[in-house]
Image (tube, rainbow, N blue to C red; front, side, top):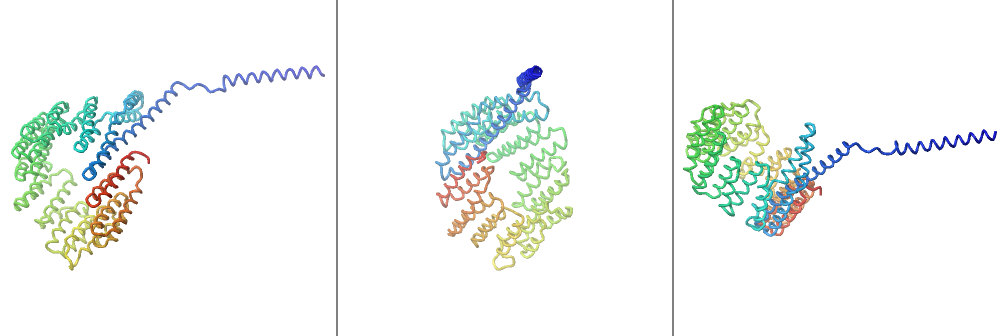
Length: 566
């Protein structure tokens, strides 16, 4: 019995040892973590690189926005607080320099390599991210914005930014972006050194950008030689339509300093447009050239329009602008040109275009020929309130000088509420005292209409009108505007009007409410906050230099936070 029990115990221990050994071996062979496949590790590395690229792209985009915010604020601050403006340009310069991030090129190259094996949607995402990184780090225009803004205020900073920007632009492998940036630098450089600016213009490879730069240089420098070069650059454009458009743009710019040269170039542009093979395209482009000429020489533009083929409403714009210009000097000719514009509008290809043209012409003729204006509007289908609103508003305002009660009645019947609001505000400005429809009565009606519409600009104008009459009501109207930026802007303007009128307490209350509205802006509206504070600084510069500077300093603080989460 003892032997049997002992034998059984030994067997049991041996089995237990074997089991423990097997489990230990299993822990080594089977229970430990298996090494990851190479593809998984590579995928994780790619995901990490992509996340890093997205983060860097966001940082570079924020830096670019800060450059614009700081330079915009500096331009507003420069006349009254030049020392503050110089500091802002210095900060903007530092931000612009930091955009040339070497890591961006490395990450962009990795993304392009990964995109080669990716599916279509993933490939597009990779390439888009790579393109943004390259654009942020290669483009030189932020440095150009700094150089252009502070040339007079901080010439040393401007010179350094110009030098760095030119160097960066010239090594950009994207030739289109290179020419765009260099084109902007040509104009900045030309203000310092005209010869160097012209030499740089000659380096541009894109003929369209080259033509644009030569035209802008001619505007900047003036003189026959500059305009000759600009016209020649326009003639070198290979595409007929582009050549005609650029010649017309050069002609328009030249008319201010040399009308004879401008007219000659307009004729050349019209002839160039005539080289298009398709009749419709040819007529439309010739009409565009004639319309540009009509802006500076009504009779010549009108004559040129009559030479364009009467297709697709090509003559409409030129005849309209000629008519508008002639109404003051020759009303008969002006009305005739507008009537020809009406006839031309009937050939416009889209129904909306035809209806819009009729409304514009009715608006133009509301004063000089109300009967014809009404006849035009009656050709529109019923219910086109949005289109005809401005024309009917113009007719009401024209009627006010002839028959005030009739104008008030017509204003009440305007179907479009925004048009009715604008008309009531315009009528309130010319209303006489003691007559039906006094200024205060019309302002009250306009206010009742503006509040439910949420018309911020109208409410701001109404707040200013009421502030001069009833200070507290003016503040209350501005304070009731729903959107923070619009409310702060209105309150600041009301405060300024009240301060000028000696209403110190009401002015200070309005300013307190304006700053409260600004504090309510979220981080993603920092650029709006900086822009508005710059406007407020400008608005108060003449009346309260200390307050103006405080607004500029608050704007600088907001500009530094553009693109951040705080």
